[in-house]
Image (cartoon, rainbow, N blue to C red):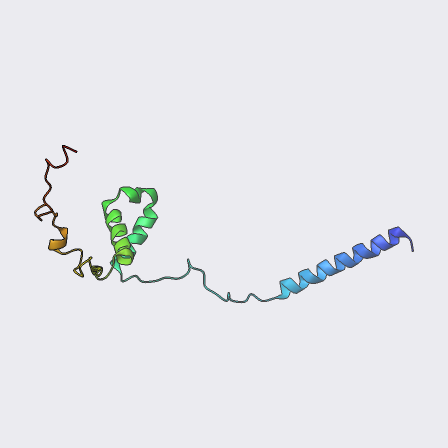
Length: 128
């Protein structure tokens, strides 16, 4: 076989395949989509904060200067980031001091200035 004849047979086969695929695609019926797009859904918002946040979103950059939007964003942050109950911090247990008393007691924190110490004779060391 000649190369030209082989190329013509390949071209005719390709055109036949393309025409068949086009005929099959045109004969199909439109099927409803398996999912709904987000824009097509209509939801009724009963939450006034959500409605205000949507309004601020539509304002775009102008929402950063709108006091109502600033308040709505603050409320939204507080809803998720603010703890529902105040944190209760419990003091750490105290380690006992050298005599078995806790180190954080008022007696342990007082300076040892008033405690009597050994008497030192200042004249005894001068002569030696």
